[in-house]
Amino acid sequence: MDNLELLKRQFRQLLEPERLSLPSLEQIRIPHVQAYLYETMFREEGLEYPPPDRYGIRVLKMLIERMERAIIDPEEDVGFPNFLGLRFEHCIFDVLEISDDLAACLAQLMSRPQVPATTAALQKSFVTYTMPVTALNAATITTLEARALLASTGITGLRTWEAALYLGSYLSTTEGTLLVQNKRIIELGAGTGFVSILCAKHLGANYVLATDGSGEVVDDMVSNVYLNGHEGNGIIDTAVLEWGHTLVGRIFESHSDTRTFDVALGADVTFDERLILPLVLTLKRLYEKNPRMVCIVSATVRNERTLEAFEEACGSHNLQFELINFPSIQHNRQIGFFHSTNAPLRLYYITELASA
Image 1: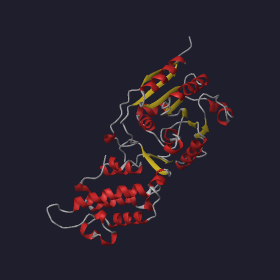
Image 2: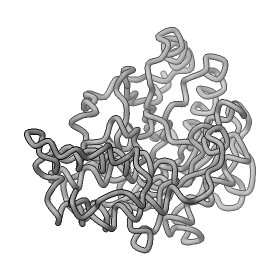
Image 3: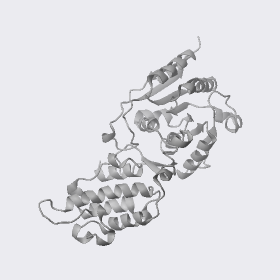
Image 4: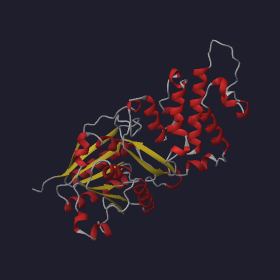
C-alpha cells in the first residue's frame, strides 16, 4: 500500500502522532506530496469529519519539521533558525520550499483559541476507521467518541477499544464475513456501535441489534448509526440491555422475528470479573430462544484470571468454546482498523452444548 494512503488512514483514526507512518525525507520534499498531505488531511473544506485542532497541530508540526530536515542541505551552512520556533511573519517559506497551504493551515490552527488540555481530552471527536484492505477506496466507519472520558465517568462505552478493532479486523476477512453475511445479529456491550455498524454497513448483515447497559452510551450509539447513514432503515436497531436481566423491552417484545438471532457478538465484554456471570446468563437466555446461534467474543488479555472465570462460567452453563486462530498483526504492519497489540488479543467461538 502507498505510504501516503496509510498515513491518511492513521491520521483519520487519530493515532498517536508517534505511531504515524511519516513520509521519508526524500518523499516529503516533493511539492505534489506536500499538496497531497494538505488536500487529504488538512484542507478543512475537503474534510467531512475534521480532527480536533490540538491533534492537527501536533501532526502538522511534525510534518513541517520533517520537511525542514528534508529541504535544508545539512552540508550547507544556511543559518536558518528552527521553523517551529519562529513567529509566522518571520518564516521564509519560499526559501524553505514548504507548502504555503500547509504553513498557512498551521498558522490558522495555532491562532484559534485553545481550551485547556484537560478539557480538550474530555471533548468528543470524530474518529474514522478504515477497513484493513489495500483498495484506495476502502470502506470506512466514522464515530463520535470521547476517548478520555473513562477517567472521569467510569463509563467504558464512549470509545472504541482494541478488542472491537481486532474483532472488526477478523470479521473483515472472508472467513469472518461469512459468519455475519445475511445473518441476524445481536451485539452485547456495543459501546460506540463500531462492530454493529460494520456488520450492517459493510458486511451484509440482514439485521443488527446493538445493545449496551448504559442509556447514555446507547444515545451516543444512535448518533453514530446516523453518522453512517443507517438511521431508520430497519437494518440496525439500538437498545438498552443490562446483562443478567430478562430480555424485555420494545425490541424483544414487539415482533417475534426481532427476538431471533443467528449470531451474538461481544468485544471487550470480559474486562470485569464481577460482570462475567451476568454476561454468561444473558448468553444462556439468548441460546434458549436461539439454540443454533453462535457467539464470538473478542477479549483483551489484561488479566488471565478474569478470562479463566469467563471460561469456567461458560462450562458450568453448558456453553462450549474454542479459540479462533487469528493472529494479531503487529501495529507497524496494519493497514486499517489500527489497534495496539501490546496486550494479547483472543477470539472465542461459543456454542451451546446439545442437551443429553
